[in-house]
Image 1 (spheres, one colour):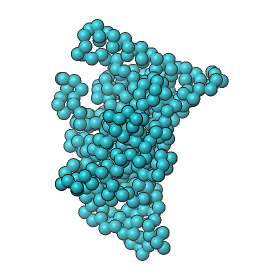
Image 2 (cartoon, one colour):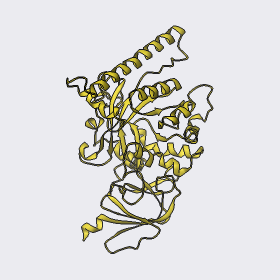
Image 3 (cartoon, one colour):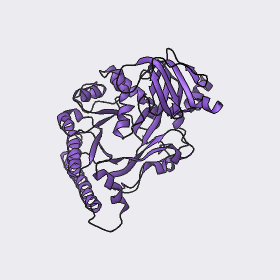
Image 4 (spheres, helix red, strand yellow):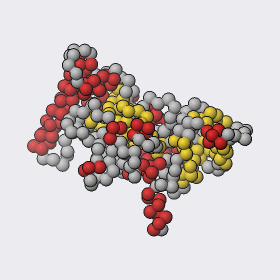
Length: 396
């Protein structure tokens, strides 16, 4: 009977933010094991239920941190703790989870701020490798792994030279960038021919790209300017890749082009400087709303690893500048999950994983929010091991 008690948990009377963009409703949520069983205005309590009274509290789906080196970097100043980069320009066979540190001291700080899943992302060369979606619990990286190969990540140099460089240096930068883009194109051409069976020679790098040529997984281009975004999408279309733009500070200039080809945009940080001297001071704050109004799929992310704890506040800024709070929440929950092809993560609904956050106050608002309890796929998360909170209590 005690075993059943732990498997059946009833959260009663909370404001339920379902993560799908719809308005919050007050009601009950019942989950059993790792899955949500029922969501209703009232669910009668049974003797075997563990009941959590949550009237006046807010219940959210777990937040998903995309495009982050979490688990791959521990101390930036110590090279031996940085595993986000492989040697060489083309390493598509590298998968991030193989270097993921499940014992990282950064993970408790993220869990304490509602981030229960992260996309560990490699960063090096032109084709850096494949990211992995990890849940922030488990004794080993294999236990924590959700998707070993989530997306392919490319980092081409910008085709737009620095405006602060001399004309000679601008010409050199442009030529170097064009040469790098040509190397990417040539590599993709060879890899696609190999995947079609033009060679019987073994090549693990080319083999890693075959699923991406079939369009089954997203390919993320880390680019900012309009020229780079256009070049990335056109190159993707040529090789039947499924492109996504990460960064994309000038994506709004190509909104109709991106909408035509159904290219999502991952806005990396709403807390950033404007892209140019002539841009409005609130350009980055209003970008998610502008992209959303243009009919694009918008996802919010945050850079760095320890700074990922501020992901919900990036969404809060988008909400303060025109995006509805529930839609901003969807940009860090259900929309990233859908983009990754996950059907049971990112929402509060029957059949979905019981990865939940019970909060006091609005999770998108810095002063008012406080995470009370969290579950990763039905397992209660220990929120007392956050080293930042421990230091705060010690020295306050």
